[in-house]
Image 1 (tube, helix red, strand yellow):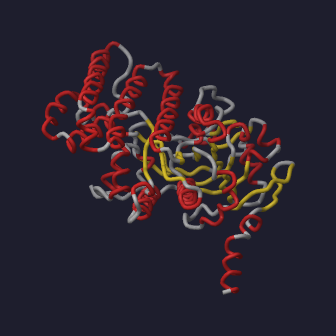
Image 2 (image 1 turned 180 degrees about the vertical axis):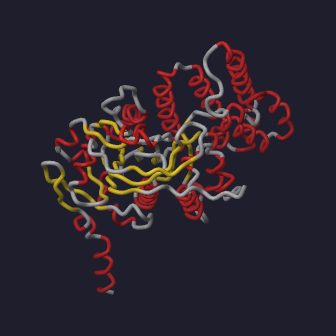
Length: 431
């Protein structure tokens, strides 16, 4: 018995000190915590981070590209850790709210199949084996648990008419079959609205009629769900009714984006995403994990970008209850598209000499680690320093222009550095 107890203590207790290192970064010594981004099961390496994240209401994790396996693995590992040790049960991702409700039904009840559910997310960035593995893990973890103990999966984005419109139709088909034909007629052009996916409608004279029509559809939906509220709650329960009805709010957000000038698009989108996360928090009354790009989870804009971002709104809403972690990498592979509408490709990018923040982290001599920005006074993190910043679109011939100056300590509470990265694994689908 004594031997077993000693083994247990050895496995659990030493991680607080054993897994931290003192390294030279720039001109100062820093405490860092090594991580292994090539797998998702070694949760013990995250134990030293527990005091930083346990008591937060919302934890946001970014990514320096939308197509990197190591970023996805580390975020999956963190959510597994948070759900097993810190009481987090709500997973959210930068995908359209309505389109993820089928994923939520799958992880909660095994309804449908994982590939069909994932199609609702409408964005190739999440159509990967890494995201699929996380969803399957959530489903397996939920098996046999009481509903109040289960993990849940939501999107918080608002760029598509299709997801919310189809989610509302799915609800009516399930709980009001007798009136579904009338409801479909009221949905008009939003019924199976693949033709309105993303940015089809633009401000201007040619779109005024279409935009006016969608405003009318939204009014129809509000009246429909108001008149039938008691009937629907009796059939589905209030929680499911509220989840369905919130799609009307996200439709309002989409039309607001559609009507906005291009210079306001990012501000409006990020403010709406923050409001959606706030609503999910209040609806579920649980801790929430947020998966998005560095540029969204950041608590301040990058040095050369002045628009407010989602993390700034979350910081205002939740204060110390919001903790965020950004990613920095040195070189390697990822997937992206070269132009909207083009085929998904694999790209590689070399070390960039002008990336001053990245080069400072490389000088530590370690390949992958977490560093707590809140505990650091390093000048490298307090001044504008450049690092790779890549979204969904990437043009190889301009590779050395895909970096931004960030003030790491101002924008992030924690930072994960990975020296060399690889492409996320695209999901295999039978055509």
